[in-house]
Amino acid sequence: MTILIFLTGTTVGSFIGLVLDRFPEQSIISPASHCTSCQTRLRWFDLFPIVSQLSSKSRCRYCQTKLPIRYALIEACYGLIALFSFWQILTLSQAILLATSLCLSLYDIKSHSFPLMIWLLVFIPMAILNRFQIITVFLLLLGIWADIKNIGVGSGDFLYLALLSLSINFQDILWIIQIASFLGILVLAIKKDRELAFVPYLSLAYVLILICHHASL
Image 1 (cartoon, rainbow, N blue to C red):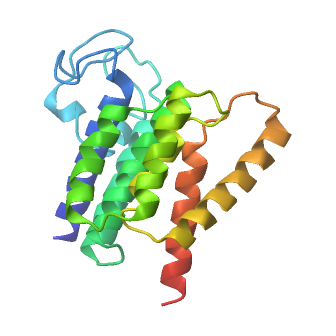
Image 2 (cartoon, rainbow, N blue to C red):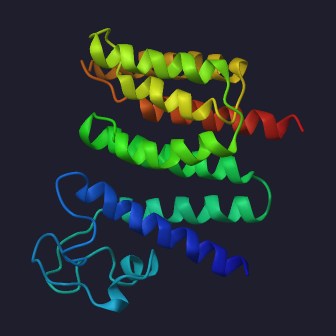
């Protein structure tokens, strides 16, 4: 059963990798999965999460182009999230938020933008199933304000925090903001970048908060 759960998670991760590659410029349904270098359509044995990439030594079977290791890493991360949920280390809400956090973080790194449609697909059912807090409304309003006014903070950062607030309390939100800000400032000081993808730092801070909560149990 453990192997089945892990494989299910890696399959979700494989689909997320596809979404990150194609959304929003291309359809996530067609064309079928193919090598982006030689355009050869991938066979069924090329599509096994992690295993296919490892067995081909991270190269396309048809043109030998080097494949990014990130695909296998994404699949492995989603497999672990599924396992942690199955083992009840994570609640279902925490697992969903971690899976979404990884997707939003990778998208932010890739394009320095926030995929509103992906966020909505998770936020709406989470809002229905979880307690709606005042802080959630406040963060949503901040997100709208940031989208209208250029305040130096992306609206997606507030929307992501609003999503987290459906599962964690106000104090944890404050800790996440402080930890993420510290990490972001540290990276800016080292790399001297003008633009910073901030959702990954918020996500990392959320992971640290979860670890602290589990360590205190």
